[in-house]
Image (tube, rainbow, N blue to C red; front, side, top):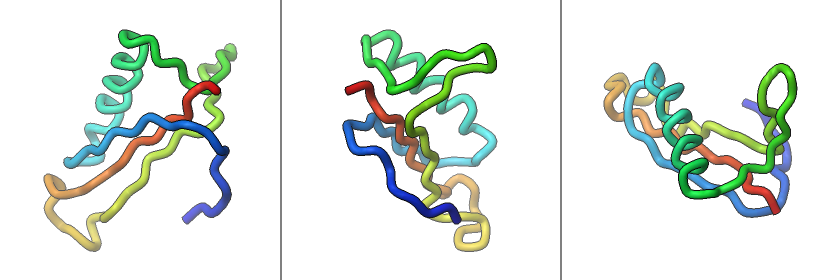
Length: 82
């Protein structure tokens, strides 16, 4: 577990239920939706990729708690530009 304080501000979130293997695609869909709708993340482009002020995957359960991957709950959170 990582503890800390998240930067204040507005966030976009997406709730996902399913296997962790799909999270790359789910993240890409959220980023694509944001681009299509003009939503701007609090991020900086670098030569190594985007660096986000805050981008999280919150796992509400896990394989130890719930053995059925179709019932795993994850929330994606991306900080928006101020």
